[in-house]
Amino acid sequence: MTRPNNEYMDAIIGHKFNVLDKGYLIVADYMGDEEKIARSARVSYGDGTTKKNNDAGLIKHLVRNHHETPIEQVCITFEMKLPMFVLGQVIRHRIMSPNVMSARYSVMPDEFYIPSLERIKAQSKTNMQGSGEDLDGFTKNAIHSSIKFSNKASKHDYDMLLEKDLTRELARGVLNQNQYTKMVCTFNMRSLMNFMQLRKADDAQWEIQQYANVLCDIVKVWMPNLWDAFEDYRLNSITLSGRQIEYFKSFLVGATDGYSRDLMEDFYNGINGNNMGWSKGEIRETIEKFERLVG
Ligand SMILES: Cc1cc2nc3c(=O)[nH]c(=O)nc-3n(C[C@H](O)[C@H](O)[C@H](O)COP(=O)(O)OP(=O)(O)OC[C@H]3O[C@@H](n4cnc5c(N)ncnc54)[C@H](O)[C@@H]3O)c2cc1C
Image (cartoon, rainbow, N blue to C red; front, side, top):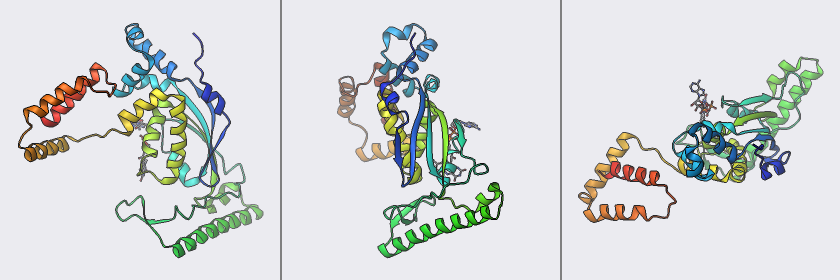
C-alpha cells in the first residue's frame, strides 16, 4: 500500500491565497485524497464494493447516503490571516483543531480590515444578520473614513497603553474587531464540507464567505468527484418539510385537476433513459420522491 498524495495539493502547499484587503489563506499540510476515502470505505464495506464500484461511484454513494465517516479520513491544515470578527465565526466550528495567535504573548500588528466602498451597505430590512441596500456615495465615503479613523484610534490607544507598560493581555482589550489576527486549523473533510456549506451560503457574512470560497476552489481541484457529489447532494439540493410536501401536492393536484395518465407514463418512461448519470439506486430513489410528491 502506498501513501495517497495529490499533485495539486503538493503544488499549492505554502501558496498564499489573498483574501479581503490584507488577509490570506495558506494550505500548510494535507492528508489523503479521494483514493484514501475509497480505500477506507472498502474496509467497511468489504470486498463486495471493490469490483462493483469505481472510486467516483463509491464517493457519490457515500455522500448521497450520508455515510460520511470515510470522508473524515482526509484532513487539511491551513493558516489564515483574518479579522477578529471572522475568527469569532470560524472558531464556532467545534469539529476542527484551531490554534490562534496569542495577543497576550505577541504585540498585535498594525493591520486592520477596511471594507471596500462596494462592501459598505445598509442594514438589511429583512435579515437581521445581513446587509441590505446600497448607500449613497457621500454616506459610503463618510463611513469608510470613520472605519479607518476608528482603526487608527484603537491602534493609537493600544500603543499608548503598551508604552505605559500595561500588560499585553489587558492592552489588547482596546483593539477593535477589525484587527487582523492569525490562526491555523486542521479540519477533517467531513467537517470542512459542513463549514463550506454553512459559510459559503448567501446568509453567511460576506467576509467569511471569501475564506470559504477559497477552500471550495481548493477542494474542487483536489477531490473533483467528492466536490461533484457535495455540490449535487448538499449545495444544490433542497430539503422539503412534510407540510411543504403536502402543500405542494395539494396545490399541484388542485391546479391540474389530478395528474394525467400521460404525464405519469412520460415520467416513468423517461426516467430510465435520462442522462443524469444516475445509478439504479438513484433512479429508484427519484421515482420514490416523485411518487411522494404527486402520489
Ligand atoms: C448564517 C449563520 C448565522 C449564525 N449565527 C449565530 C449566532 O447568532 N450566534 C451563535 O452563537 N452562533 C451562530 N452561528 C454559528 C452556528 O450556530 C454554528 O455554531 C456554526 O455554524 C458551527 O456549525 P456546526 O455546529 O454545524 O459545526 P461544528 O461545531 O463543527 O459541528 C459539526 C457537527 O458536529 C455535531 N456536533 C458538534 N458539536 C456537537 C454537540 N455539542 N452536540 C451534538 N452534536 C454536535 C453537529 O452535527 C454539527 O453539525 C451562525 C452560523 C451561521 C452559518
